[in-house]
Length: 374
Image 1: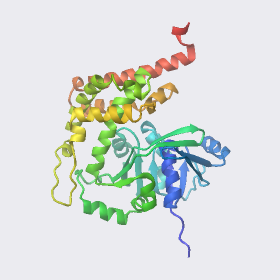
Image 2: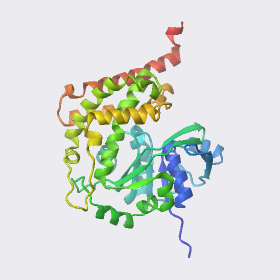
Image 3: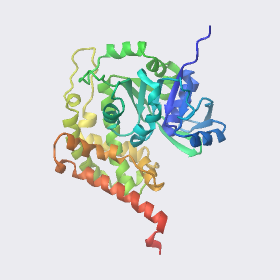
Image 4: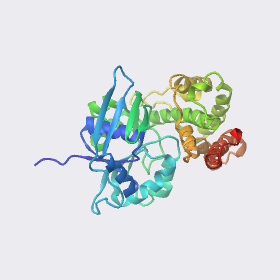
């Protein structure tokens, strides 16, 4: 008897969701099911014959991958007796709770849920407001590949990076520390990790399966890149590379304030020391050294990706809501939770306010015209 092809559901079919879906369907040979928020969005997808193309331009030559997702569905058409065993979430951070709501009835305690998103704070929302009766297996992915939407359901994979993945600590665990033996056993016994660590899929996205403490350090590093770049480029309405020679003082101020709060909130990580050879060594200076971190941010975002427009700037230009509450706003939230006082987050609070002001200004100009040109 032929075994049924394994299904992986993808909630959030934008740039990152499409990249993961195309690699899974091609290299892990599973059936990928995009989950759309409405019949209208599903119909729009149907108008493209449910076909998605990803053009790879980061290597010599140009290759195009095309995949068809006939199983794509929406809440109204999801089978009543269906269930979701493996789910990847790549929605905007602030959309996660509402996007999940219509599919919660199909998620069960053994479901594997992988979060691949910008920012921090979604996990707290899921634990406190979504998975209140039970908690599925939760995993985190941190991706550094560069991919953007070209037109419609056509995307460009412009920069090859990596995908760090890890199991998140369980509901009954207050420890962030995992051993190499633990993640080795996990890979052999969990269906989603088995897919993500298949050789072809691993090669296609440079997947690195690691302990939570290793992944968390990488997540905080990426978070600091986005906390500096996204807000500042949005407020100034500029391309990344335009900041390369002028951003250092501003980034230094953001980093100093943010690190002080993150050290208090993530004390077990910053105090981490390997208990034995079964625990990995971690270079904490990647995040703890302010100068090294600032230089890394300028190199990776202003130099290496100098021609890019940040995702938050694109949101403000296109008059969409931003993820600033899960970036600079997360520092403000932590200050309140840790009773540190507003003086410890005044820079990040100002950046949150200015990003929102930039968005409202862009919306005003779109509706009433630009008074500078009148």
